[in-house]
Length: 60
Image (cartoon, rainbow, N blue to C red; front, side, top):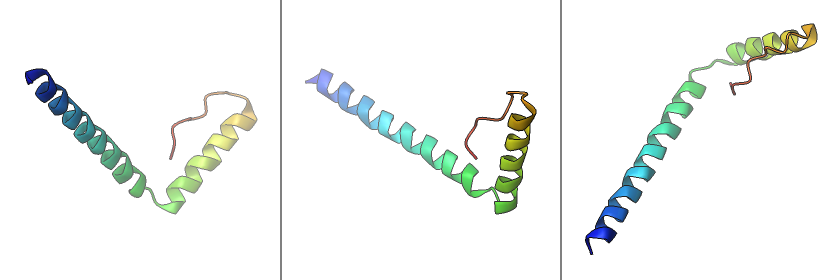
């Protein structure tokens, strides 16, 4: 019976950790203004057109 308790607690901890990560990403995404997103996209496009291949691949 103790094994099931440990597995249950591990599952709850995993779900809570995933929720924290998702909430943090949503806050970061919400902090961007439309002008910030537009500027980042223009910068990435310019880098790709120049052929540097160093465009920021992180999602805005």
